[in-house]
Length: 339
View 1 (cartoon, one colour):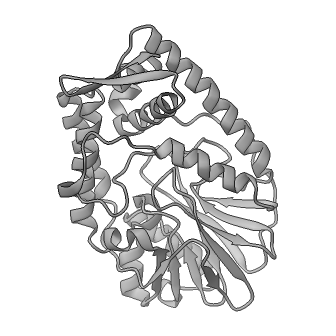
View 2 (tube, helix red, strand yellow; view 1 turned 90 degrees about the horizontal axis):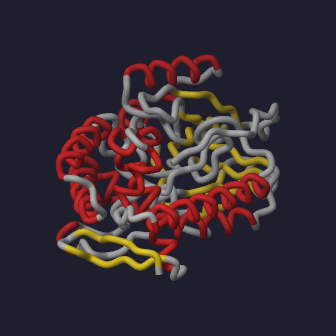
């Protein structure tokens, strides 16, 4: 799960032509950062589909001499509702073109159906990892509520690894960095030595590697016994970002990151401690992901089921891949023991 920050908000100067402001969300992570870039007028992420978020967006754009109707382009960093939820409404009012990672174009375009299918996909796998059916029922209700904060939106331009997003006076290199979500996309402004990173790297909390339906998978063709590897994907993505030569990371929540390598190294050290803790819990007889989550996070394991189970399953899969634990299915439930 996310951990408290030890990095204070730095006073930094954003590159010329970029401004940011916070849009409120109804989620525990707090407000989301959106970015406005001139030439063509571009909005990076939108906030969720709530009246308060829309009111805030209108007010903040107005304070900078713009209206929603002036937007020419909307760029999405990933497909979580706090980042794309308002996109459909904004497009209807402005006619802005939507740019997003190509792998989620179909998902965004048929949001209600795909989000429902993904909920079923995840629920089956969480139950296989020991989630009691009655807890799954509550998690389903919470997921249904979250899905109400977004609507479908058509993607006009599908972004891909190695592509370029062009402005009048700058270029952003496009990089796919899956982990926190399957669609996490970051944008590298080489000239400004800046990375627009969404939730890929946050200063104040560690980004959860959230379980989701693999890109391009539908429920009919999904294998319920497959291993899911969001944390493994995230670890690989962080390695790639660690190697980048940037001075500033503009994040989806909280303050900018001014030393991305040092922060990533702290995140990795924290992950290693968590791995050791989970091995200890497995050795103590807590054999399923839900058992481990309940021991470590207590009541939070029932309240934030998806986040806690994502965290535990990701670490269990890393441990299994390293040969430190062994998973065996018993009566439809995956149980682990120390190797």
